Image 1 (tube, one colour):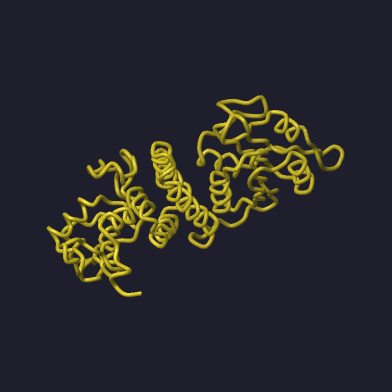
Image 2 (image 1 turned 30 degrees about the vertical axis):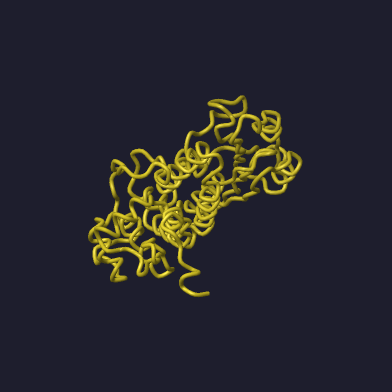
Length: 322
């Protein structure tokens, strides 16, 4: 394929990068980051090499490098000596800059790391998303990164999806995939606490018809950091399968995730809470923890649900009577 066939228009490049065409024109005019060639009608046509420079520019500005300096580094194909990988320094929340509302996610007042991750998500930059997520978890640990970076960015993508007639579905799916990848690889990114001795596993399951697993995946990874053994059953676990798993593993706790009120099932939770095992005189029961917004603030089974990942980890990593 020749260069002209591979070249893209400014509008196509803007959509790919998650910036406005006005931004591309500004970078061309101010910093010389324009296409190497133009058509006879002076229309911009961007080659893969041109786009690679722009992607580098986006990464640098998302990491906090001033635009002028970022443009110089992008043109040279180099990296700022002081530029740190995501998560190497705590960046306080900052006010968002005004940008084109059609391509910018509604993040509000969030950490700078969220902005870099969101911009990489909008331009479907898989390598940049994975690099940022892995670096953040390796530096800060899973719980703060989940609560301060992953969840705010996911919510921003969700709001954009709802307001855009199914645009940005691909952004949400790709971002969720890379977050899930990071959650599952968390033990390789950060040293684990030594396993707790004589600890029964925590059983993690989504309620029947519940497909949202990311919060459970985050809890599974965070408990792993604490050395708490787990058994992850994942999405849409039928009641009989859940009961069978409880009988076979004798868990210290069972977490039942429900994202929507329609999937919260008090009968299933009560059935699991009533199960006993062990020799006569030393019978045990699992702590049943209904989790997720589908349950409301309280349930009739056990304690009130925990409100966030940090509280869930604290509760489940503390020994409790069976």
